[in-house]
Length: 325
Image (spheres, rainbow, N blue to C red):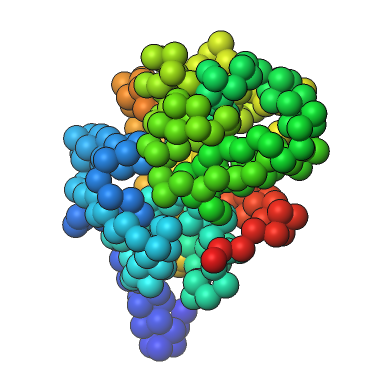
């Protein structure tokens, strides 16, 4: 029994703090939440973020708005969120490059995703698609490898830029297949796709969503996708793993994170809200139309995944000796 007046006052204070914390968790979010995105409007990640914001809002979860902060290969938006208050009202729609690749390529980022961000939930994943120009005569991964070994250094592959997740997917494949191909980094996907379709470049490791129209039109040839399972967007196209390279996987992904130190109760509450949206058939179908698979996770599982991805791509970058100019 607490008899001392101070002890009673302390107990009352602690009870008040506890009740206030519970009330705060129950109320969250009681003002608009910004989903900060490292890309300009348009594109699959932007569309997923906006669909998620609309679903959360229409479901009574609060007000959610998308804020586009493109620039510096995703580092600008990521750095902004890292430095934001950890009250849960500024969140990051994080992507593979900014979270798992850039920390190795940019030595002076000023933040570490593993320690400066807290995972909320995975949102969506998509494989890279390996494509060939019709003029190359290559129609399978096996033919690609045979050609590369027969004529070392003569094959080139296009990507959407040096040090991107697509470039690293190509480097990981080169390492696994023990072949050499020259990377031709474009300043974006459209130019790479057009040059492959025209036969100016033989191979590409490119964005699935952007490649789909040219694949459907027969202007480029899909050889494989880079996930563990076949893509729902290209169910007849085998994976790289199925094509003789078991264990190979290179996914692009979109995830929701917060500044480190966000109230754990609010993290779990938001994670449950987000996962409920991701489980809706309408959301899954909308994501599939963009070449994405809607995939949720617990906060803990996301944190472990991001850390594992960072280690994986760090190893590839060092093996391939990739350095930005």
